[in-house]
Amino acid sequence: MDKILKCNVIKLEEDKEYICEESIVCEYPLTIFLNKEKLATLLCSPENLKELVIGFFRTEELIKDLNEIEKINIDESMGIAQVETKGHLKINKFQCKKLEIQDNNMSYEDNVKEFLESMSCNAISTKVKIQKKKIYEFMNKNLNHSSTFKNTGGVHTIALCDEDDVLVICEDVARHNAMDKVIGSSIIKSINLKDKIMILSGRVSLEMILKAARLEIPIIISKSAPTSLSLGLAKKLNITLVGFVRGNRMNIYANGDRIIENN
Image 1: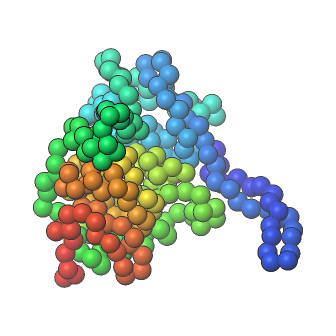
Image 2: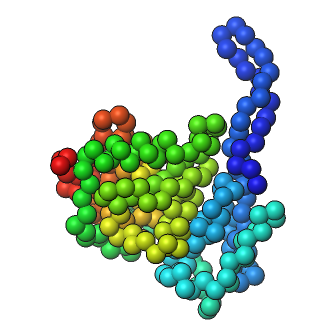
Image 3: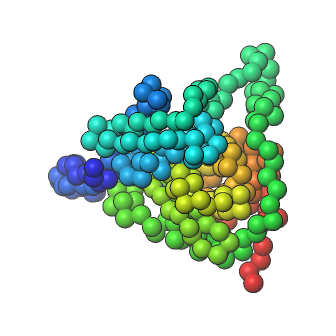
């Protein structure tokens, strides 16, 4: 399945109007069946689908270990992923996609505080550090990785790094899918995530921080901004959060002690 498709558009440039061909990113529905029961449909880019499924299962806490999955069969032409597990999995709501208001009589601020307190993730403790120059280097590598983005402007890229280099990069039309692909690829390759750094091309939502927290990833760095909820959760869980990394500038939003001067 092609990641990039072609379409005709009417282009307006000042007083000129003409028809031309443009590239557009493919958005692909992948329906996941768990032990022959429909689980979810993900709208994604049509690549690294096995990694996406594994990452989705792990970040939604459907599995703790890759060995719990017995078989994954993906039919790309039909858009179906069949997953078989060794035992019955208890399916709750997809926690990364749900923010439930606890009490309609509470203020917004109190509801948010109670929601953040209800998060079951442990605070992160790690000795990992990253030099400022490495932040700029990793961001540059991440942003220049995707030919799909250069041709369409329609995908997000996410990179997983250690203190020295980029280890994994994945792209997708949805940033949370790109993160799941990176996590899935890391699980397949037996990469320990507890001392790693994630580089994001897009906005840092609550969902992104929660996915990282469940894998105990200590540092999240983005080209764009965090949201108020993602910042609140990052502070609560001791996750270093950096945004607006552009050129030689950045904003350190939370737990900046892991950002160190250049050697």
